[in-house]
Structure formats: C-alpha cells, structure tokens
Length: 433
Ligand code: PMP
Image 1 (cartoon, rainbow, N blue to C red):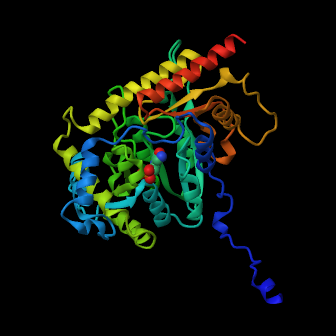
Image 2: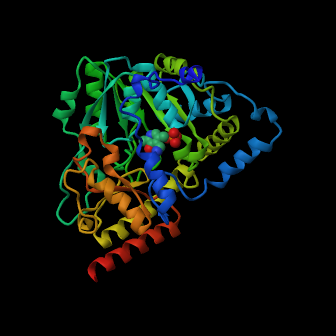
Image 3: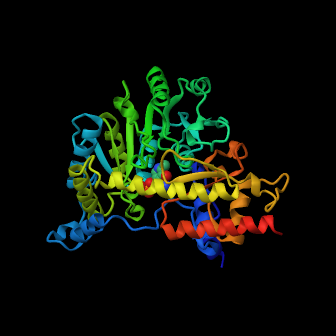
C-alpha cells in the first residue's frame, strides 16, 4: 500500500510557461456550436467544397503512379510545392526566390506562427499585437517567454447614414509609435485582418514599416486572407515596402487560399537569414505535413500561376463569390438592426448587437464579457453560432468593445438563407411580443 501511495505523483506537472494560457475560446465555442447550432457561422471555414481542380489534384496525388507520395518528403517542404511557391510569390514580390531557402512549408499557418515566435522571441522581448487580433498570437508569444504589447484599432463614426466599414477602424499613429522601444523585437501584422476584415491601406502599412525600420524590429505578416479582398481594394504586401523584405516573414495558408482548411498546409516566405531559424524550430517539432496534401497544393498553385490575372483563376473567382455572400449577410443583419461593419476583406463580418440587448440582459459585475454571454445565449436559444469579438482582445481589454459578434460568411447560399430566416423570425418576435 505504501508503495502505491508513493507511486502517485504529487509534484506540480504543468510547465510555468503554460500558466494563464490554458483556456481557449475555440474549445468552448466549437463545442457549443456542435451541440446547439442549426446554422454555424462561428469558426472560420467554408461549408462549400474546395474547387474541383484541387480535389482532383489530391486524388491524382493519392492514387497516381508515384506511391512515394505516401511516404515522408523533404522536411522543410515537398520540393514541387516549395518550387511553385517560390515562383508564385517571386512573381508577386518581384524578386528571385530560392525554393530551398526562401520558402518553408508548415502544418497550416498556425505552425508557421508558432515557429516564428519560438525562433525570434527571447525572455523579456516585447511583441506588438494590433487589437482585435487572431487570438493565438497572445499565448504563442507568452509561451516563447515574450511579452505581448497591445495597440488597438480605434473605430471612427461613419459618415451620416452609412454603415461602418472595417476601414473606419484605424491605428492612432502616435499611440502606435509609443509602443515601440528597445525591447520591441517584432510586430504582428494581419492584413486582411481577422476578425474585422480590415485591409490595411498603403499609408497604414508605411507607418508600420517606418517604425519597424526605425526601431530595427521584425514583422510577422500573417497574410492568410490575401486573396479575399473586396470592392476593388488591393492587398499590399508589407514586405514589398522599402526596408521591409529583410525583416519580414510572410505567412500563408492553403486552407484559406483554396477553401480546404482541413488539409493544414501553410507556408512562410522570407529572407534566408530569418527562415534559417524557423527551420531550426520546424526540424525539432513536426517533421512535415501530409505529402499528398502538399503535392495537391503544388498542383493548385501551378494552375493558378498559369491562370494568373485570368477571370477563371480561383483567386479571382473566390473573392467574387464571397463578396456576394458578404453582401447577403450585410443585408440580413442590417434589416434586423444588427448593424454590420462592412469588411473590406476576409470571410468574416463583425456586427453590433446593441439593439438586441433587451433579449439578453447584462449581468452587472460578471467576469464574462457581455458579447460572450450573448453569443452563448444566441446559439442555445436561436441555434445561430457566432464568435464574440472580445475573444479577439487581450484579457485586459476584453470589455473595451464587448457588444459585437463575428460571423463567418464562407457558407453555402442555403446556410446564409437559414441564418437570415433565424434573424427575421427573431426580429418579428421582438416587435410583436
Ligand atoms: N492566421 C489567421 C489570421 C487565421 O484566421 C487563421 C485560421 N483561422 C490562421 C492563421 C491559421 O491558419 P491554418 O488553418 O492554415 O493553420
């Protein structure tokens, strides 16, 4: 008996770096959506299929002649994929890229981000994060021993009678500048931005770039929504601005690019002096992601390179279709008074829930931000899943903008219609008690 008592572990098992980052909103909201939702506009993934040419490429990779595609490939990226990514991004950036040193394939953009923070951030380093932000940046910086420093996008009132646009959310230049110091190692830029759909303008990018150069700071540029830009807006790559190539890592995702988030193929593009350190993290964590998926993505990019700028290109077709879906959702929300913020990019849309507060009264002094309780109530009572905007703010700022929820509109027409029906019915119940 005494031996078995001794055998039970009593020492603390959790590493210190996990303190305070054990909660994750996706675990909670994905479960809620699975349990209660009839219409899921929560997590960011399409409910329509990837394009046929991509699925066919996967089938070819899977059952074609080369059974070696079922085996390990090169750790830092399947050669056909890094080669085509180097050609494709070389064209976009106007530079000669070496597939072996300027490109690295990762397990989704997620692993690319993880490699960046592990490779660049030391204990005590500060990393500037623009709020609201894709939530994993904060715990990833902390796990690397760094300190996140937050700077908010601040909303300006739209012109009379107009809906607010994601472009109305802007950085205050003086506030941004005040966050840079000799401790700043990196800034994370996410344009087009999840959750707002903001596409940073050239002027805004120049402001960030000038500060990076002045303070000798790295830029982790998360560009996973690079093709999802609307209304003729342009996605500008910060790495193309003066002085930035040398200090920027560009992150991309086949999941977002080809509507196949489950494949988990991502990549980084950048100078070898930065990527060499990402390779060190990569070789000591995962070996690589599925070879067949990488091969199929390579074929997808081959097609897109051939059709570049052509109306048949998926990178032109997808945003065209999504812009239409965005406009449907805007109409549905505006009609019921859940004021949408018109996104310039991404497949997300943030809406103001203030007018629905009477249905879900606030609990004074609650730790939980109002929007989070609202989103939970909505999925449980209306079957409609969305994500509270506070999930995209740091702990200290969760209550700054807590009356918004984020919808994903990368959905079939029928899904968006079903969401519209729920909203319409809800509005009728409100006006005719
Ligand atoms: N960055 C942003 C801004 C995202 O929204 C996401 C996915 N939601 C990712 C990175 C992760 O992409 P992946 O699925 O390729 O890992």
